[in-house]
Amino acid sequence: LDSIEMLCYAFAAQDFSEATNEENNQRVTIIEPDELGDVINRTTNETLSYKQINGTCYSHAATSAYINTCNRIYGCEAPNYKEAHLISKYSENGGITTNAINLIEERYNRGILVKRLRRIPYISEIISNSVIVNFSTTTDGFDQISNGSLLHKPLGEPENVWHSCLMEGYDFKNDYAIVKNSWGVGKNQGRFKLRLSALNDAQFFLVYFTIDSIKNKNYPTYSPKIAGPYNTQLNNHIIKSYILDEQSAKYETNIICQPTGKDLDKNLNKYTIGYDLKNYIKIKLKRHDYQDLTFDSI
Image 1 (tube, one colour):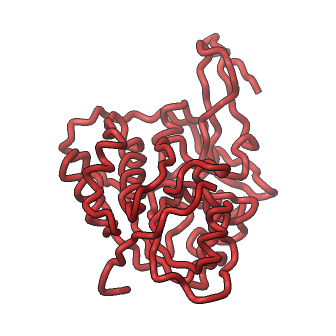
Image 2 (cartoon, helix red, strand yellow):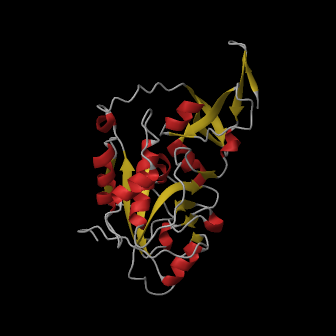
Image 3 (cartoon, rainbow, N blue to C red):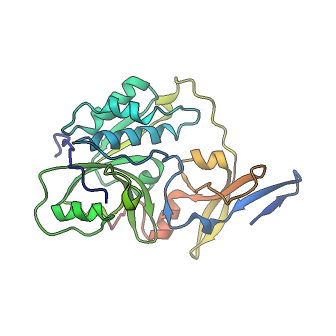
């Protein structure tokens, strides 16, 4: 597996407190920290779930990763999903992740990059970027995925197929990743819970952008509105926190927050409290981001 990238062509399974800004005399809404919840899924992960036809999971994962990454670039117009999917789907019988991403980039030229990780992805990467996981598991493992979760390695030999999915969020209470599948929406909204230690084998691909990769794309200048840092207490630990407007909460990569707000008057300004991402992970999971004890058996 170190010398080649596996073709991924797994079969399609069954569908299975308000505050007042006195200085400006303007009401603003502060979303309190505990409203983050336990499951973090960035608002830029906007792609829907689709049901693959034949061995095209690699294309769906690549298309979702590409579009979600475009959504993290201020002023970048993401391509249409169906069009990008057709471009990246160069085979009906499996494909290679980097090829699929590069085909989309050749067409749309948004400054999106892809690389294979030679290690387990950090949780911060799953939240801040797009991480594609290509994996193998047993027949029972695929059945468990169709029912919504794969948390423990099943007995038996792995199937002679690999599957490709997009890791798009994390559940900090239960310590597992939230993964978007390509087997239709079904009862699980097209997602399943995954601990990577439950897989028989896996490869990981990071889809991302850099300042250099987008500097000549004529995107508008991103000007964040962030106050802080402030020392805040979280789970009896001190952590750096920030107050961000809704736009900054969407585009900042090193601050964890969900700027969804409450059902409020549209004329109100919405602000959210965010935390330093890596410290948040350390406090919530009681380990460093790179000391991922859940994933270390691969």
